[in-house]
Amino acid sequence: MDRRDHAMAGMDAVYVHVTDDMRQHLCDVLEDLCRSGIAERYQIAPRSAVPLLDEILLAHAQASSA
Image (cartoon, rainbow, N blue to C red; front, side, top):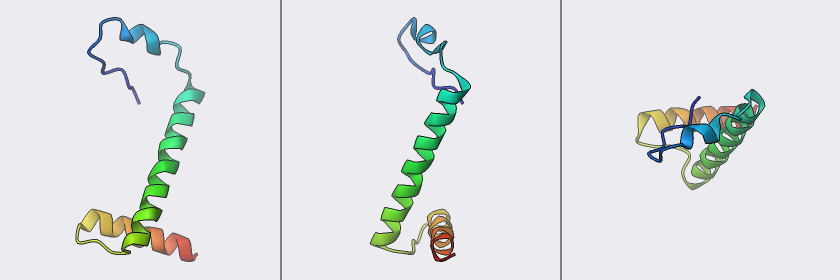
């Protein structure tokens, strides 16, 4: 996972120090945000007309009831 697509010259050097632990932490935070967003969306309406979102909501419901 690389987040270096900056237009500013010299930004590559800013991200040289990123460690595997830092990348994992970022992934964990983003995963938590995603799960929270799905849970909030499920509270609004547990189903969706969008097939991919509906599949995600159904998986959330199954995981919540387990």
